Image: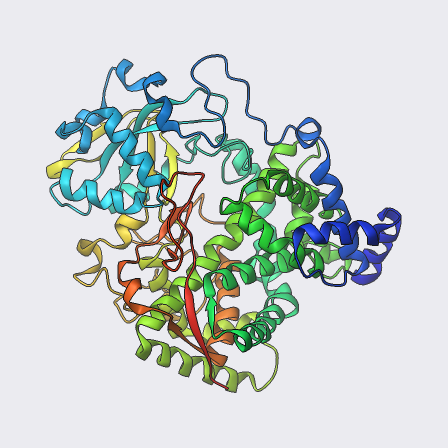
Length: 586
């Protein structure tokens, strides 16, 4: 029924000479186009058409609201060049929180512009997470739980850039409480891509409406269990054959690129229900564009709108359609299509982007970091392979199912320890206080933080805090003493959000990661197949000793085999990658 519905849709909508158009597009997307099915041909032809059209005029997506005053910074221009022209919003404050919390402003060792420039450079290098550690060491008496203030440039959509304060939270009690009580997001996401999607909207009512609509696509039993055997497990098995083919040419593989590809494939095939040919043609180019590849903005915008158009495929079905006897297919596409009005293009396209980007980037990086640690700790890799081998003996040649994942208890420890040591979202979450609040200052005194203040609830600082995790906080140790809420009472797998005061890889409710359960299931499917068939070694262990990751919204491994840009900034990023020697086991 799914195939018949898709074929009917394609026959009605596909324009003439589609094959010629597909081949022309394929020559731009990949050097080795695969034969496209009718569904794939229609999807690619749609992408080609939308990538060429007047995208902004049709949808308004990608347009910044008109500014009425202040300096305007064009895309790709370094904000450092305009610091002296920016308004300093902190000068008009009746109460300056920077005078009550520690930080470089309070010590007065450097001027405000110098600190802003220093932090911008850290952001450009993807090292803001290590910069926070530097601030705690030099301006907070070395206290790893200290909250502090740094000056930043706020570039909220529709407003001129201004200099303002950012309160960085590291105290575990403050982090958990602020994230739960202050739901409103800080307006720091660019309207160019995120629009008014579920992760970026600053309107609490708009967020709740979206969350309530989208959550059914990620329901563990009604959705994820249904697509697991037919999509997630099948693709995970297929990636083994793909990796075997790669190592026949070269035993050294960029596993970061490989796993990012597979994580995006899982999302597009399983949750969005797009044709496999379309996914393969667009996967690499989309990821390159997100990593800073030039001149691909039209392609990204065209891809996002194509995903929206494909969401109307009558073959797509969400859990709500199960009552009609329709098989589940592309549940996220179906939910986006049916619950967001067509005229609300910013919301639809914003959600298409965030699920396509964050839905694969965080998962791919987490799997890469785990292989990185397993290569550094071969005895742990051997233990995990033993568990995985026993798991496949239990399966006895049948397909993996969603309910089987609870048997992988040591893998759960390894994944949670990876999320602790290398949190995919090291930045944590951003909030704008909805009312005055009080947080911990130096020496335990409480400090008032006014309504409207920008606050960042970081993961990196708490997850590596020796006061919370012990003296081995910087060491990969899956046998450490996790609390029951951090590893689901050692049951191996659960749909609950693993979160405590010291640990929040998917942030805290109510704005926790909506796709966390899909990510947890696909990671176990992919990793179990890979570790059952391969052993992983670092190509050059000596250069990995200085690995601290590259943080551009998500934390990936720095590729030391490629040189860093001479003058890194947000549009000229250090490369991400992890070259590993892949050794077949069977």
